[in-house]
Structure formats: structure tokens, C-alpha cells
Length: 189
Image 1 (cartoon, rainbow, N blue to C red):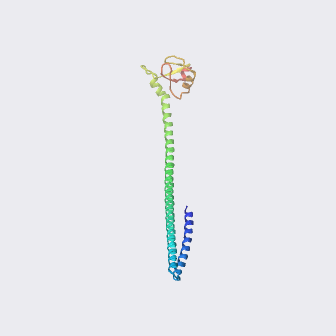
Image 2 (cartoon, rainbow, N blue to C red):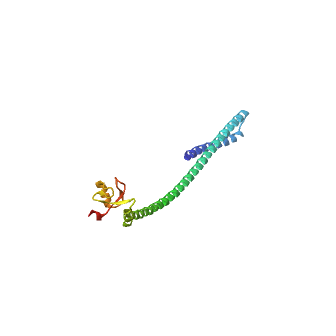
Image 3 (spheres, helix red, strand yellow):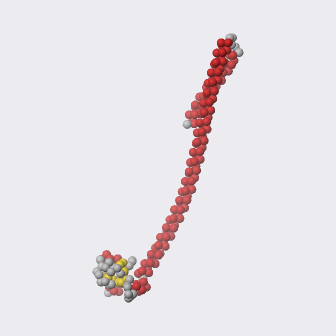
């Protein structure tokens, strides 16, 4: 954490100030020594303080490097997040456009399907279709149904099948002979 590193750096900075004060004090005392033993003792203390001071400076440099690394990592992470958010926004916009286009296309296709199915239903149940295939002498394709029976093979038809044929929504094959059946109101009379 950068705050912890800054706190640690401040503690070391206080130690450096203390070492500087001691170093200045010992340097001033050098000129007041009376014998070689005191002089040697002061030099040892000065060297010790200089070594301690250098160790602390090295630690401060390490902390500064860690802080710099953390800040760079944070910056890179923020840039990655911004880039990802930007890419996400673009992808969402593209998805929205594609979705709208897809919905529009689906509606158009559904409309076309309804129109085509209506045309097919009209052509399959219309008089011209029935006239064309009903009286084909060799192999008739369609035949009317009367009194619940197929007029081609005269088989009795199930009630549900009779009902479906009377609705006239589509041509339904006879279960016995396979010919397509339609309902002709005129034949029921």
C-alpha cells in the first residue's frame, strides 16, 4: 500500500535528520579532542553514523522505487480498465444495432411468410386448383369428401379428420387411399 510505504519513508527521513545532527555534533567534537583515543573513538562513531545513514538512504530509495512501481501498476490497471470499458461499450452498441436489425428482419420475414402462406392456401383451396386436379382422368390428386367418407375409395373418415377437412384450412390426405380431400358444400346436399 502506498500510504504504508510513505509512512515508512517518513520514519526513515526522521532518522536521517537525527543522524545528520549527530554527525555534525561529532564533526565539531573532532576539533576539541585532546588525545588520539578520543579522536579514534569519534572517527568510529562518525563511520558508524555514515553507514547507518547510507543504509537508511538505500531503504528510502527502495521505498521510492516500490512507490513508483505501484503507481505505474495502478496507472496501467486504470488504462486497462478504461480500454475494457470502452471495448464493452462498443460491443454493446454493436449488439444493440445487430439486435434491432435482427428484430426488423425477423418482422419482415414473418410478414413475407404470412403473405406466402396465404397465397399458397388460396391456391391450394381455390377453385382453379381443385378444377385442375379434381377431374384428372388418369390419376386424380384431390377428391371431395361427402357424408364423412372419401369420394375416391369410399372409406369412412374419423370424426376429427372430417372436422379438419370441413374447416378447409389445408388439404388433408385420406388415410386409406392417400388422395387429398377437400370439403364441397354442394355435395353434402
